[in-house]
Length: 146
Image (cartoon, rainbow, N blue to C red; front, side, top):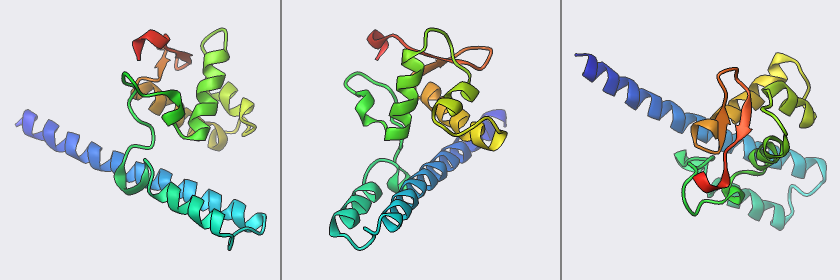
């Protein structure tokens, strides 16, 4: 009975992860569209092509936006905002809290500004890109563990 419940919960979690990935892809597309609107390039064919590329890359249609760290998967496979976070954590001399990363990204220290950054840090840790300490801070993993 517990094994059946655990399996149902695993399936539910997988569905939630897929939905989160779809929402992340939508966030990227909307952000690019807003930027194109602001710069007056919304009707530019190059902007349309870029938006098309975003919807067909990881994160679209339930694919993982942040891939698991495996042999042969480079940091360049991560979305730009995740690459920026990785760079900050990698360059830090000690484990960093999400609040510090949020400040470095120019987002601020309010809970609504820090929590999205904390979620990205956790996702990077869950997928093997970073290490999360028991105190909730984040450090880079050695390159050889990829």
